[in-house]
Image 1 (tube, rainbow, N blue to C red):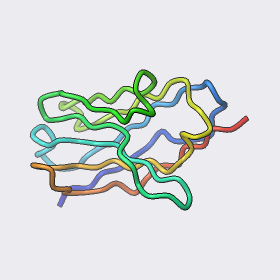
Image 2 (image 1 turned 60 degrees about the horizontal axis):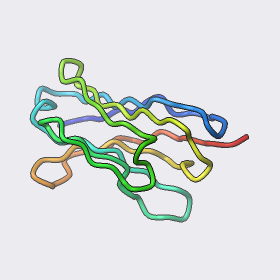
Image 3 (image 1 turned 45 degrees about the horizontal axis):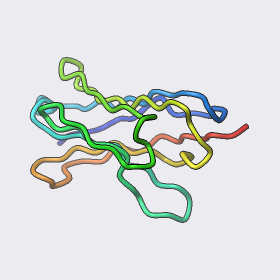
Length: 116
């Protein structure tokens, strides 16, 4: 069974940067699509960014130009580089593994708080 473990969250001032990491167990990471989602208090979990097994990326309009998703198949890890953070980016960020559009696993989440 695949396990996803996120790290890299924390408290940052507006305009600052963070890099989230998501490490996956198992040998099947290379062939799986990966994504980052976020959930703010009282709101639904929303898509932030995805990256396919082939490296194609997709972003929510709210983060385009500020966030970058990438993957290192040798390390079974997907990253989310977040720049120019805004208070509205505050949320719990979750890593997700998918195959043919079907979710295989979620991580436990990592808190990102953007505040002065």
